Length: 94
View 1 (cartoon, helix red, strand yellow):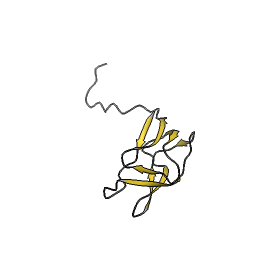
View 2 (spheres, rainbow, N blue to C red; view 1 turned 45 degrees about the horizontal axis):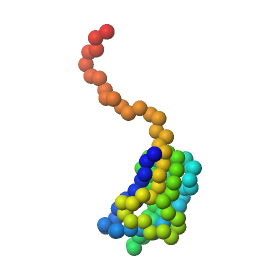
View 3 (cartoon, rainbow, N blue to C red; view 1 turned 90 degrees about the vertical axis):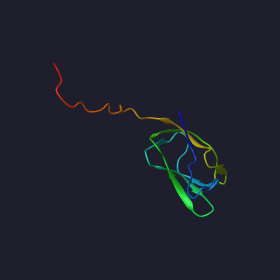
View 4 (spheres, helix red, strand yellow; view 1 turned 30 degrees about the horizontal axis):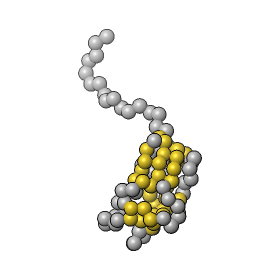
């Protein structure tokens, strides 16, 4: 399980209001897929997903104010790929 906190949406704003959720609990999400539109004092900003996964919990509803750095969404990651372990350069003995 991964909890994604509301990032700083610019210029050190202390919080933002949930304008519209684009996902719901149980949805499968992709990397960079828009999760939510957050309204700040200056604009409405779409917040993308930092990774792929399945939405487990939304922390707030339309109109709720979330402080920067506080939980926004919880999801279970679905990354099943293995990380690159590096490239071997040179001669390998058999």
